[in-house]
Image (cartoon, rainbow, N blue to C red; front, side):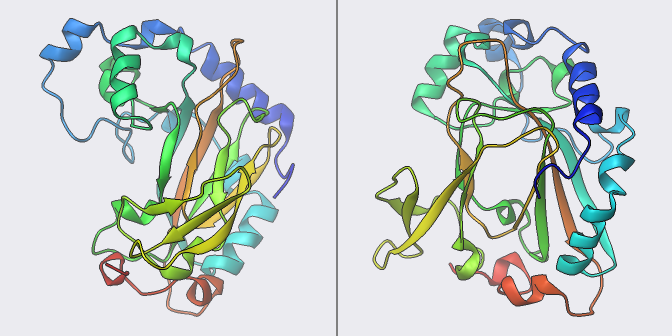
Length: 264
């Protein structure tokens, strides 16, 4: 959905976030502090747990007439926000050398373990491997969608979301995925590394106020940001689940009831 939200309101939130802290190398732990910390698995914002989302009143998104109409069509008239959080795409200039070196070995990882504890109220990435959001919902319903809100203008150099259109047709497929011939506008995907199907790949560049929705079983990721200025992408990511038994659009497009029932 293009330009569904007021750009002025989105820009206001971006400005508040940008003024909340120093957005640069100061966000990161020194290497010695990183090495001596006892790293836990859950270092990302949770629902009502160290989550910058809770500092904002976001009715202009969650009660937007067009968004609610679309969610009602996809999920039915009863749905629940599983989690909402801000996502920040990290420019290379912010990252200490030890983090850059680490990312060369493991590209596309979540960066929050390198971030100072007080700043882990958003999720930090610098590029992200293709994945399905159902990966985090083992033995739970996969009848949910991701809703992604661009709060500032996102160019091809600012790590836009890349969607593999139609990849949900296989249902939940465990990570890592079998992908080949990864081109600018297409990719081949297989669930068994034998039989590959060609899918269109779409880079979602857009404007402040654009809203994108995809299924829990849709492959998506991002490339690294390539901009040399101080602009960085601040987005808002929602996971929203169906909460009633009445049939809706998601029942026609998502295979299986639970993630564990997906293709192995």
